[in-house]
Image (tube, rainbow, N blue to C red; front, side, top):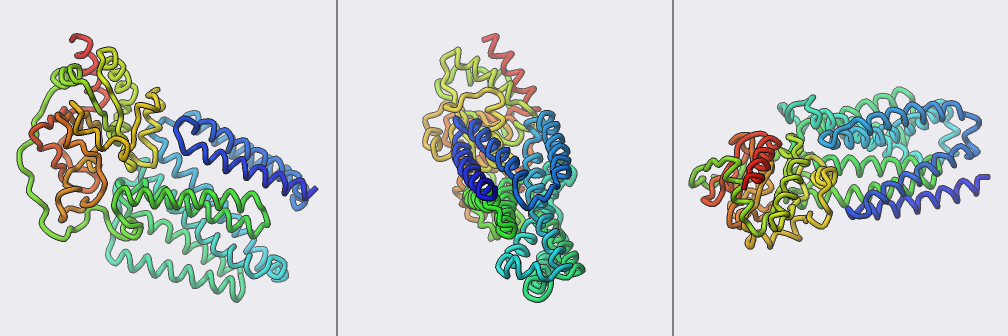
Length: 462
C-alpha cells in the first residue's frame, strides 16, 4: 500500500507543477488553478491510505470539513478588492500549518528522545529551520493581512527597531541551534516558537503599503520552504516537491517585484520606503490643472490611441466595471484602447490583472511595462486611474529622489495625460508626482467610479 501512496504523491506533485506552470499566463491561469486543485485533492485522498495514519480518519475528516467550509464560504463572499488580504491570510495559514507540524514533531521528540535517532539529525535540523520559517511567515502574514484590511492603518516604527529585530532573530536562531544540537525540551520549544512568531510580527510592522507586493511574495516563498522542510521530516514526497516549487516560485517573484521597484530585498525589510534621500530633490515646476469629466470624455472620444494605467485607487473605487463599459464605448467610436500594468501596481502581484479580468477585459488588451513602454510616445491620451509612484517621472531624472532608478511607465511621453485622483496627495513613497504638474497633464478629481460614470454619460452625448 505504501508504494501506491508514494507513487500517487509523485503523480500529484507533477500535476501540481504543471498547474503552476499554466498559472504563469492569463489565458491558461484558470485551468492551471484547476489542475493544481485536482492534484491537492488527490494528494489529500491518498493520505487516507498512508500506513502512518493509524485510523485517525475522524480527525482528518473534521479538519477537512471545518477548513474546507471556511475556505469555500470566504472564497464565495470575498470581493475582488479584498483579494490581496485574502491571499495574505491564506498564505499565512500555510506557514502556520508547517510550523504546527514542526511543533508536534519537536514536542514528540522532547517526550521520547529515541525518536531523534529514528528521524535522523538532518531531519531534526530541517524541522527546526522549517518551524522557524513557518512561524515567521504565519505571524508576518497576519500583520500583512491586518494592514491590507485597514486594521493596522500605517507602518509602525519605534526607536532602535532594527536592533531589537536583530536581537529577537539572534535569540530565535540560538534556541533553534540548542534544540537541534543539544535537546528539544518542551520549554525551549515553546520559547523558540514564541520568539519566531514575535520576529514575524516585528518584521512586517514597519513595511509600508508600497512594499506590500514584495513582502507578500517573500512570505509566500517562506511558506513554501517551510512546507518542503517539514515534508522531509515526515518523509512526505508530495510536501517536499510542492513546497520546493512554491518556495522557488515565490523567491523568483520576490526578486522580480524588488527589481520592479529598484529596491534590494534588504531595503524592503530594513529601510522605510521613501525615507531620507541623499540630497535635495528637484523642485516642481508648473501647477496642477483641473479638468472635468466632460472635457476628459471629449479628449478620449476624439483620440486614435488611448492607454489606461490602473492603480490601487481603481481597486478602492471598484471602478473596473465602469472602466470596461467606457472602453467598449470608445471601441465603438474606433478608438484603440490598451491597458498598461506596472509589476507592483496594487497590493499584490497581479492585482490589477485580476481586477480587469473580473470586469471582462480581454487578455490581449493588457500589456506589462516592458511590452508597452515604448508605445506611450505615439499615444494620444493616457488615462491614469489611481496610480501614483509607478508613473512618476522623477524616477528617471532625479538621483536625489527615493524613487530614482525604479522602472516606471513612460506616461509623461504621451501627447496628453488625464489623471483621475481623489485629491492632491502624494503616493505611498511620500514623493510628489511631477507628472501631475506637466503642461499636457490634466487632473480630474473625484471618486474613480463616479468620475468614470460621468465620463460614460458624456461619451453617450457626443
